[in-house]
Length: 145
Image (cartoon, rainbow, N blue to C red):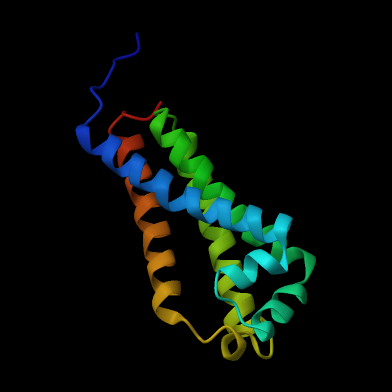
């Protein structure tokens, strides 16, 4: 017999905030890939940053999409109280790490061109880790099934 665990109020808060946060990331990646340069300019990117974006290797685009859309999938799965949220947030984190690697280590001018925005990189990484931890905690408590 499966025991039903009451959903804590904070799950809805965390999942809702995760949906907003990751929804923007997914929207940004979609618009960047579909609308291209006009969208990137509207987001305040310089011509040098747009040129850098166009030089991404294919694996970098894959990592970026996995990072953004994996986070969105994790938020939706959290709302649905599915344990797969942990795996989706984990995939998102791997995508985040890959993009950080490429920007700050793997490309010769990434940090310089992109402005070395370590504060925002830290925020993104921290939120990704916290979402993994929260999904793991909710899975262990039996809230996510």
